[in-house]
Image 1 (cartoon, rainbow, N blue to C red):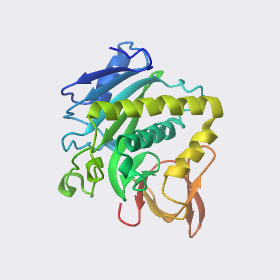
Image 2: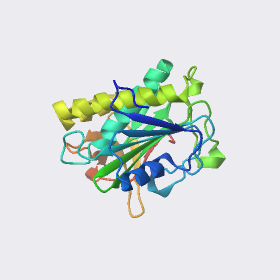
Image 3: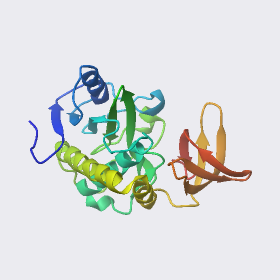
Image 4: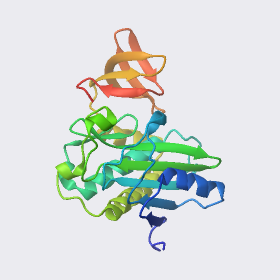
Length: 247
């Protein structure tokens, strides 16, 4: 049942294969934007670049269905920033003790003291957009499961019920879409920079065809990452971003 004060129709399931797959299927069937789907257990979660999202138990698995132009913009490039800002603010509201420990890694991973705690997957289905949010709440997957060290919110304080965490994120997403619509992408860009790894952070950017090493030099006007390398400034559109401290 939809809360009349909220633009979201939140549906909760004990178990789903993938909340994003569920939303994509609903989009194909003509569902309206504003659908939000929360699974208390997700068995086939997906991460970026075809990776599997490992659910370590009592995790957040939330996806939303949106009109791609809902924020009043004619480009999709702002959605990773609106989503990551909402994710950051929602988790901070859920566990205020993460303040000073939580950070966004370009474009939309969330780190706690340098270790991944959550990520976002954005997919298109016609005129609809599905944004999936996954976060480790009270338990993090092991390094053997993911190939990297991970963190969870529970390391920093008591975590509220997962439905409350989802509602914090949805409320924040509403707020950031309004900021985007009213003030343009520049407002998102600056807010994102305020919550991201600092300028000068050593980064490695890798993809199937490239490997670049340098220092984070901010964001281009359209949100692409600027990397200051030994051979000059590079503008990065996509790739895996590693903080050289080992993230």
